[in-house]
Length: 264
Image 1 (cartoon, rainbow, N blue to C red):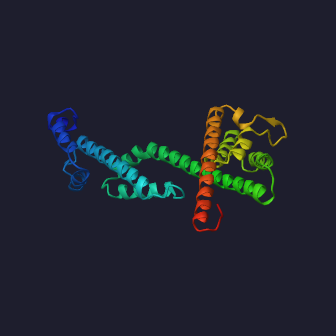
Image 2 (cartoon, rainbow, N blue to C red):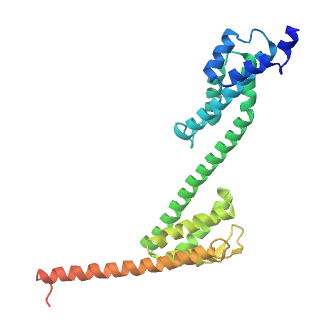
Image 3 (cartoon, one colour):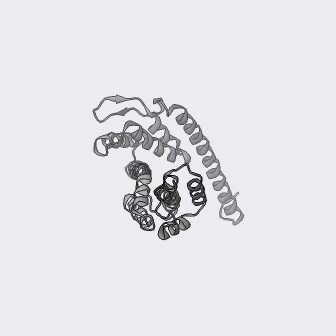
């Protein structure tokens, strides 16, 4: 009779025993497993090993999240190796192979999910770095063409249009990624009030890597409204810069007059 009660998961004694352990911390549960308070009763032992795996899983996920968001190098760190290192450390603290198995089983989907997220972050970061490099290259080409070789803004724009087209073949950029880098360099010049260059980039006629004509950036869906606003801002900045330059010239002349360098 007593053996049947021990084997019954719905017996009052087993329910009360399990309920008390459910309130315990993982350290207390580890101690329970070490000293075998389950007394060899299979129902209690199974429950204890399941609780150990679940509690370790909960604590591990919190620790991993904190580590990933604070100490982990999300740009170049090896997430898979770090995850496995931490998971192994947690597993070694579980005094039962069955409970360790439960722990690994419960973290399996969590591992896959985090590795996918980490890969997405690394790809995103790599593309950001690539886009920054491309925009830097565009800027250098424009500045050299205009300031050193005396080319027009339209000619400078054609140089970076050709570079952008080659980026599709050599760097594997999508059409949107190409357009984003073009818009980024146009925005940079617009923010400085260099309206002519910004306008040449946004409104210039482009060709793809295959030589076929492409619509201008400002006529491309997703960039039209933003492009118009950008040109408005560029014009405002140009006017502000002109007023500022005019004021600086006036102040310089006024100072020279005061010093007697310029006759009234």
